Image: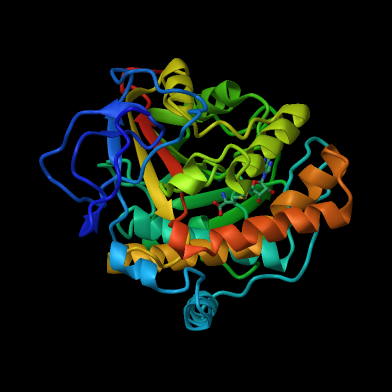
Length: 385
Ligand SMILES: C[S@@+](CC[C@H](N)C(=O)[O-])C[C@H]1O[C@@H](n2cnc3c(N)ncnc32)[C@H](O)[C@@H]1O
């Protein structure tokens, strides 16, 4: 990309004109280094490429060049502190033992065992931090009485919402029965396939929340349309999705088409294409376009660059990066097993070698790995039915 630049010796990212996290050009900002995600009101923003060949550059995660002097691999102390961070989440949460999904209506790539669920809970923690210690970003200005969390996983978001809004009834749905039994009285969980016809009364929810259903949904337009129908006029939808491609601005990684970061996403794109459930939902403007098509207005999209590992010079980003690395460490194998072995026909050894190669690179703070989360929120018009 023509606007690529090497990092100045002092601090990065550069405050000069930069592509958006997905690779599209953005105007120069006068604010200089910023952690703030790019905010794009829709549908005004320019088209963004679906799969930019040369990737984004880091514009949100500050770091010191001098830190390159260390070994580059997350040291033992940092990994230990990560595990104690992870444990601290469970000081007040009891996650059930190993269980397996048994949905007869859909296939989902992820295990639902302790290890994967630990990853989900860690991800909840750093995503909440990214959103400014908030459970959602939608500017909801009226009391919440009924909230739906679609594909709730361990239910951690729904439980936190129920605790935070005791007057609201919070319903979490999932195909897997992995939610705890002891939950706030205003929180409940239903086993439900979100791809089937929703049975909730139309116009009955104030807020529908979706998070990390990437690779799980065959028809995203239909999912958003069902959320629209379930919402009251003036109600809000918010969806956060992962982009699975890891990036590095280091030229030896960025310019290497055979780097594990690229091979990793390519094979998973292929596997989920075979399944008919795209992993590309968070790329470009797909989410905001489909949400607008479903009838929502005031669609706002934010792209977050999330570091893998504690390489940022910004203390908050450093913590987020450590949580993120812990999440990836817990999740990589689970992510790969079903898709590569069952769908792509790889052997168990091949899967493990591939995961090991990826694990080494996501731990390599010298190359400052990061990826992008896309968050979109939007409102059902007050005048709608
Ligand atoms: C990556 S996890 C995310 C969980 C949760 N939303 C979070 O952010 O912590 C995806 C979840 O979606 C659930 N899921 C997959 N397909 C589904 C479907 N068709 N309907 C409902 N839930 C589904 C899985 O069982 C899993 O718990």
